[in-house]
Amino acid sequence: MGHSHGYRSGTRYAFARDYKKHGIISMTTYLKTYKVGDIVDIKANGAVQKGMPHKYYHGKTGIVYNVTKSSVGVIIYKVVGNRYLEKRINLRVEHVKHSKCREEFVNRVKENAARKQEAKAKGEKVFLKRQPVMPREAHVVSSEGNAPVTLAPVAYETYI
Image 1: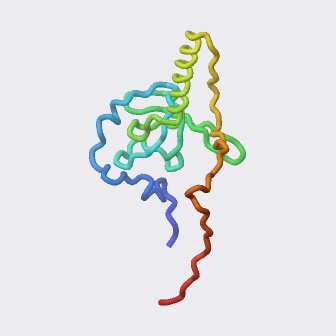
Image 2: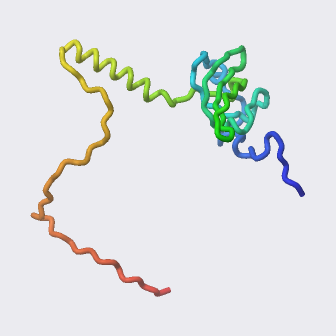
Image 3: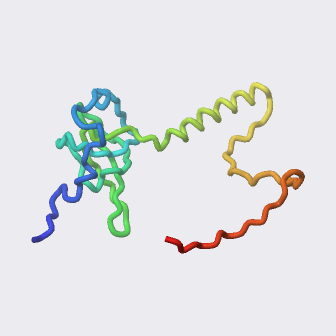
């Protein structure tokens, strides 16, 4: 018997609803506002077949370029051979969610702006660049009340 190569083949688990998330879709899904330029994650919802993305786009992140009453247009860059093709796909809002990929960056920008303003008020310079975690400081381990212990492997026993 041959292998089926349908439009939704191999999506048994990808398009399945999450554990204890079956049933009616919550209103918050429909009440979210999407604006042109927003970064969104595509996650197909198996309960709604209309406006569902192809399985290739499931889990991809794109940018909103068009907003309509019940759907959004998303730009995605797809690797085809040795190049990137810009793909414009239209999805219903049930299949997209705001991406959190810029959340940390935006928070850092706001924090840096606040620190910069605070430093300007005090009249001093502030260093805003991120620094890698440095090695721990050197220290001396005392052997007083902390006698060295010699470790040896435990003999392997073959008793059953």
